[in-house]
Structures are given as C-alpha cells and as structure tokens.
Amino acid sequence: MAGKYELYKDSADGFRFRLKAANGEVVATSESYVSKSGAQSGIESVKSNASSPVVDLT
Image (cartoon, rainbow, N blue to C red; front, side):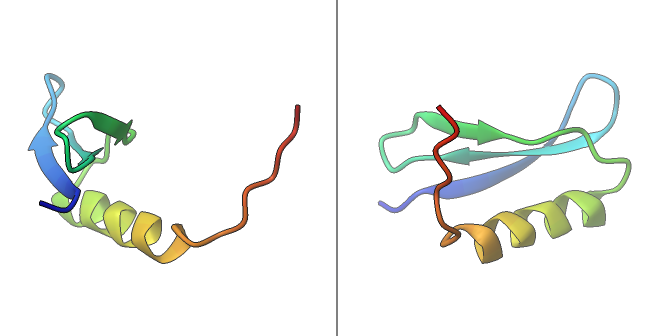
C-alpha cells in the first residue's frame, strides 16, 4: 500500500491533514485550516512541492 493523506477535523473544529507512510506511521501533520478546501489546497501544495530539493542548513 502507498502512503496516504488523511483529512480530519481537529478539536477546535478546524481542518487538518496528516500524511501517513505505507507502514501507517505519521510522516507529517498540517497546520489547522479554517475551511476544508483550505486543507485540500494544503495537500495539493505538499504534493506539488514533494520533489523540491533538500537544503541542509546544519
């Protein structure tokens, strides 16, 4: 199974998403969005930027 995005409502009634790896581990959790469409746009942003280069600042 591939990784997946889970869209859900948080305790403050905002919308968040989490990215889960194929093994079920949470890889990333989003900020809280006011609207569901905002959270969906956040998912699309992560998808489109996933191939961005890594910048090592250490």
